[in-house]
Amino acid sequence: MLLISEANFIVIDVETTGSSPIDNRITDIACISINDFEIVNTYCSLVNPHQSIPWYIQRMTGIDYKMVKNAPEPIIVFKNIAELLQAENTFFVAHSVDFDYSFVKETIRRLHIPFKEIPIICSLKLARKVLPSSIKKNVAAVAEYFNIPIINRHRAFDDAFATANFFIEMLHIIRDRYGIIDAYSLLDFQDGNADRITKTAKNFASKLFPYREIIPNQSGVFIFIDKKGEALHITKASNLKKHLEYFIEQCLVSVKKVKEILNHFHRLEWIETNNELETIITEYRKIKQFSPKFNLLPRMDLANANDIQINEKTQKLLSKNLSMIVLLGNSEQEKIIDVYFIKHGMYQTSCSIGRKANLTAIFETIHNIYFDKNLEPEIDIDEMKLVNNWLNKNNSIAKKINISNDLHEPNLFAELENLIRSFW
Image 1 (cartoon, rainbow, N blue to C red):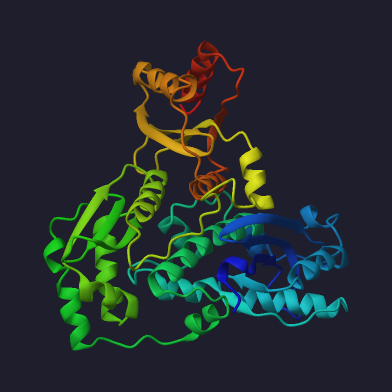
Image 2 (cartoon, rainbow, N blue to C red):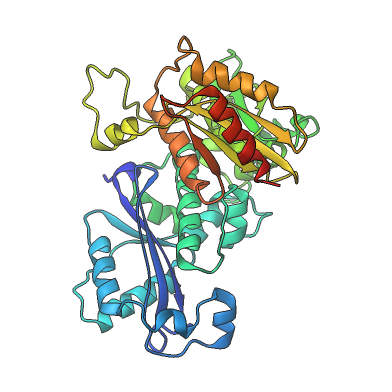
């Protein structure tokens, strides 16, 4: 068995001169490598197609022939890509995968580069399986559902990077909700058909109906509890009310794990959160605290640093200076900034501020977190990974202040105030 965490997923997006892999050519390609639920490498390049680009494609992608006439030759680009794809335990992933795979495979064949077929995974098919039926399943819509920014839509890197991030989110859902941990089982899952509604499923789903009117339209974490008061299942949601409806929907299409949870279910509790990172960390900490029967706990790399040999990725993470203040524009309210305080890679707290906000409370928070040596957070590698993945996902739109050991408080306050003003 090849665990999902051990597989190499290469998420690819291509821009082309047309729809035929035989007659048309690739102009732009990006490969995002995923291992152990995180992005580990990226590769992107324009490609000289040696043919004209229709005006409607230029308009859609922003790529014209001037941009690609001196771009790398296909043989150079696709030797690199073939090497990536031929690594052991590699899966080709794309949104509507047949299009991208056919272009890549035909290009490699045309260039006489040695290549053997590899398994292909369609993130579009997976989205149709695991996301609510009420949302669209194109790249932009799925990215929006998972709060993933796309700066340049219809450019290979930006689309591939967004796809890679929501593919990671869906891998977590597939692992936790459906109990799938084998990479090759993803192929069966994406192509399988769900059983439709049964009377038992309706009865299970009806247990959640009383909560429909009282659940808020707010991000947060659900805790499903049994008659003994023990946590059965913990899950995060960007919108608790919508997620409850989707949980009911999943029961009605006979998702086995959801029915098992509701078979033991007695009551539902929830914790409201203020932003995505707080939601992610709250879910993780509650799962770690309660060890619910129907959650698969992540591997704890640093259960005991003296007894466990820390792997190369963990060492790299620990070596980074991951103390910082991160600023993001609030996605729901104009002229509101979300401020996140991270110390040694661990999420501490966050707040939202407006244009005329008094920054005194923020300065007090900064002093307590970064300059009070008595308040050092306990390091948890898995939580650090979650924070690091969130940072990577928002890197293109976030503004950051790195906190170094020699940084003085007055200088930090002044830098933060200037950065906040730069949003307006």
